[in-house]
Image (cartoon, rainbow, N blue to C red; front, side, top):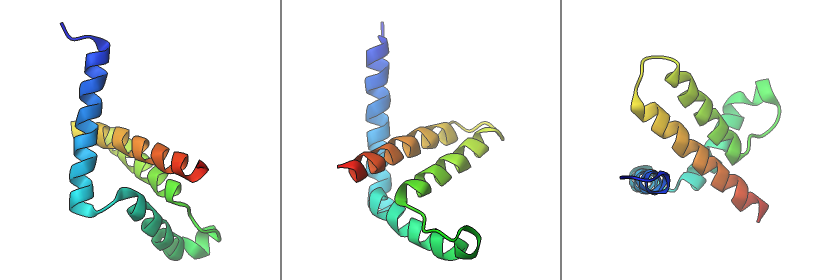
Length: 97
């Protein structure tokens, strides 16, 4: 019988694997969040008048995935939402240290 802690451990392993695969394919997510924050700030400057921070990118990506979760069911959207949440949490924790 699989316990709750076994399930959480399996889920964490899957998330770590997905993050590692995406880092390999797209590069370091923390660096990408920082670069995207700069790009979004440039594109949206006349509307927001303030520079976005890397964690803002994570929040935007979570909002996008949450929106997609309200549409056609796709398990990947829920996985991505969870992963973006974890990434954004790490970005915020690194900022505090």
